[in-house]
Image (cartoon, rainbow, N blue to C red; front, side, top):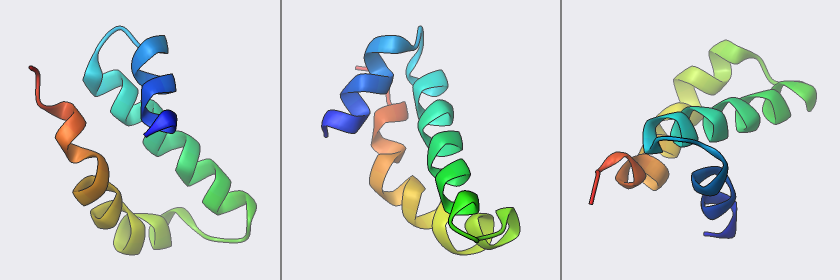
Length: 58
């Protein structure tokens, strides 16, 4: 949860924090040899299940 907190504190909205975190994780995935298509097909749904709740405004 520390990772989420970092992005929430540095972004003006929760949606921007969500996108920034997803982009950072995608860049890391690609740097390790994965493709953006692979990320979108396999990891994006898991990412959304894990971090999608942060999109809800309190």
